[in-house]
Image 1: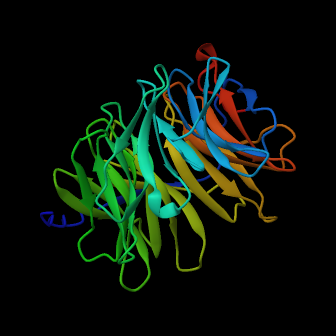
Image 2: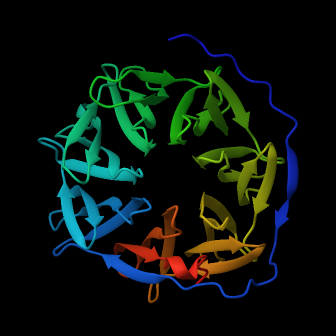
Length: 343
């Protein structure tokens, strides 16, 4: 693979830290739907599109994980051919989800796409001796993820298409490991790379070039997503060990710190500009949040002891995992006429 040059880091500016602000009027309310298959031990959701199609997985009564799709009230179990462990992640606007599975050995891992409408599975061909973990997919079907070399150890990012499409392995120059987490419809890829000293930083890969993404005062950082508008975001840790959420747009960073949180992270941006993420309280319990117009709103599944938002759709619906006695997945829908929702 041709080595890509490293972009010089632009002179990023900090827009500011978003603290508690003025509460907007007329915000809508989410409606909650728990996603559960009879007999499961636990379920989880990792992706949602603007059709409110959800992809994730569940653990059966015997302790084995399977892929799971929820579409218009119908559940579909998804397993790779001969797989003992299957998981689905994000789903694109065309209803194609991405995931990975393995059979009896993790070294037999395969990344694949799953078409919700047809049930068709297509495989990604990674180099021999690489175990793939698929983390993102765009509307054109380009998949990104992480490939672990079973012989030499380091992880590589990858981007490519299923069933014969070229798969490019990504290595941030000078890094000891790379993982890709998200891709937008223009093909820009984001993720994380690891340095020889053991630290890690976020990155942006586009036009065959890499740029390091490091919010001010960060020691470690990771970029979890990038929108079609080019807004990227994730989390970073400062010298004191505190974790903060951030977004970056037009070269400027905005930092998100939920009031009184011991840690915050950002996982996406909704259609009304609402920033969505998670925060941890002093008891180590996790909660979702929406930041709208500078005001923070906690998002907790009623009756749950902990809530983790994993994705937000272009309609403003959320998918999440919550904990009662065991993990459950749910979708929090934001009705079109009530957008944006904050409770």
